[in-house]
Amino acid sequence: MPEITNGDGEDGVQIDLISGDRMAGKTSMEKIRMILDGVRDGKIVILEAGLTPDEESKLIEVTMSEINPDGFSGIEIESFPQSETNDTSLLGRLMGRESTSKLTVIGPANQIQSLHKDETLISALISRK
Image (cartoon, rainbow, N blue to C red; front, side, top):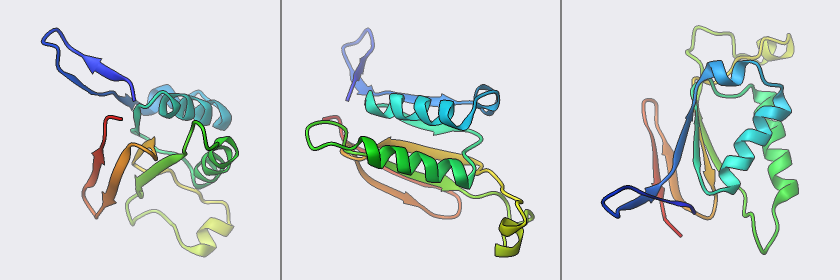
């Protein structure tokens, strides 16, 4: 994992906070590539606007195709869902009413020791390997 060093010689984990505006003009594959490139570099990627369910599925699919024993070990991903006022029922999804998540955290599987979510908190324990 890349270590960030400040002027005092301390190191840490790099976190990329990506705004919804930056992701808005990108295609699904551009978003996926940006996320995977960051995670492959050992960064934790946090998306303000999240991904659609289809984009999350495609991200997992592409990730699985890129896993190899000598290098990339995959991702850990956790998202906060949209508020309950949106139609997330099976019928709503069948009718094409997809929603994006509010916040998504994605990181390298071999460096995220634990990733836990409850209703109001996503907590990650990250190792600096």
